[in-house]
Length: 128
Image (cartoon, rainbow, N blue to C red; front, side, top):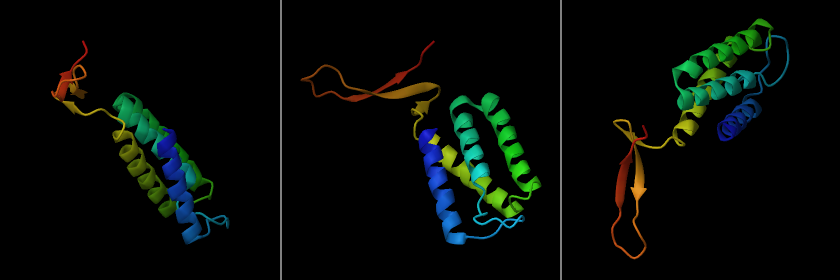
């Protein structure tokens, strides 16, 4: 989660520094919405690790954050849409790297027996 939020924040504030546009209420650095990108990043990571049972409520909460940012005049719709997209892409991209590879429900792990042998391979492991 920390890695994904760090990447998302860096990208968001880098884009804000490059673009420097105003929000509906006249504030600087509106595009993209940092609140929206970070909340969608967190929701995407939770969805990747825990599935839709946790992911869907997290996306609903992230959508409420996005709605609030637009409703209070802090952001334009384009700020919200791009922030949500950025957060979704970063969250899923980073979290998927931490998942162990899987085939038909079996985790794939390297197989290296005792030291001194030339045998190597992979194991398919499933916990019951």
